[in-house]
Length: 376
Ligand code: NDP
Ligand code: GDR
Image (tube, rainbow, N blue to C red):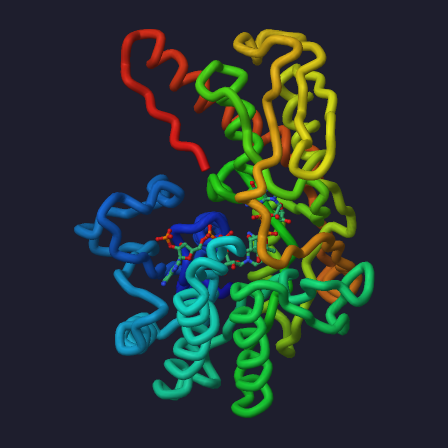
């Protein structure tokens, strides 16, 4: 980037997992970063509080705007005010299971929200200036027709979330072809981190088992433990989101590690990091994880014989995506991208973070403070 000419980025979903890592990444690259946050009755900026800048400062390079992907005029105004070189559309109702409960809202935000932003670029005549990144997803593959999944693998979405994201994927392709927009789809496979939302399965596991280890919870309830996912680290994946917008020509890329593991395996890794050895018994809705032995001092509240995880059918989905495995060959060849953090290393990082939080809560409780631990 040339001296004194700072690029401007606008991020929707800046308060989410990816938004927070991407904002950090772009600030380090010297960008001026604008983000859209939703009005909420409680604070929703925890993931970006460390980069927040006082609005009373004269020269800020990190600016938040109230907004919502369901609000066309608001989006047009923010794009007009910020005149971004790059828009990263990460905002979404991103929970697959929740999309079965709120399908219409999910379509409004995830599908039409994308259209609204693309239209804002067009209405404001920014087609030549503003590059657009769309957070597409491996959920597009749903019922998989080819393993591993590549950019050309046919889509078969299996949830209202995935169907909404399918619309978003194709409207991005269409606006690229129809209006010459520099617009890209990153087809990202699952990526996690200590900042992952608490109700996605990896974080749910590391958080609950850490709480159980500290005596703050008794049992973790899960859905389909046989589900297979290709899990990467969010930090590695936001780097790719930026790289995609720095090429000569816009294109779509699969971002994945090329390795897959089961939910059950993630439970085992987490337990192992806490010094707990498990035995799985039963199958289907009767499956349980029983403690065999405990070593070290990370899990003082856990005793051999205790059932610390069991299946609860309430977490089964009406239609499930059983297996996902990505082939990142194109990203590797064209963009020189490779993931740096393995799923196993990421799990350990997440356990370390959640155990520290659990220990804090446990300490507060032992000093008589009322610590409630919300469960999902
Ligand atoms: P998160 O759920 O952590 O973050 C979603 C963000 O979208 C939050 O900032 C949220 O705001 C915001 N948001 C939700 N609804 C609206 C709305 N109506 N208007 C404006 N903003 C809204 O998701 P991730 O960071 O994990 O994922 C980022 C994007 O990547 C999402 O689009 C997701 O679907 C997609 N994706 C994610 C993958 C993953 O494994 N993480 C894989 C593939 C794709 P608030 O904080 O207020 O809730
Ligand atoms: P996913 O992630 O649906 O792949 O979507 P999630 O972590 O929710 O589920 C992964 C797999 O684990 C199974 N599972 C459970 N899932 C949750 N949430 N809670 C449970 O208790 C549980 N037990 C088993 C699920 O059935 C599933 O098979 C994520 C989101 O980030 C999307 O926004 C993104 O597009 C995709 O990843 C790629």
